[in-house]
Image (cartoon, rainbow, N blue to C red; front, side):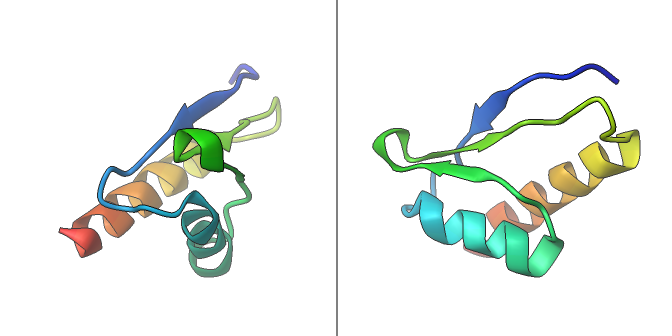
Length: 68
C-alpha cells in the first residue's frame, strides 16, 4: 500500500462536516471535511491495509445508498 491523499463527495449529502461525523461515529473512519468544496479528504497511510480501504468503500456506498 502506498501513501496518498484523495477527496470525494457524495452528491446527495450537502454537509461535509456531517458526513465526516457519520464516517467517524458509525464506521470509525477519520476524515477531514472540506466545506468549500463540499467534499471529504482521506489520507490513507503506509500502515493502512486493504481491509481499511474496503471499509472506506463500504461506508461510502452504505451512506450513498441510504440517501437514495
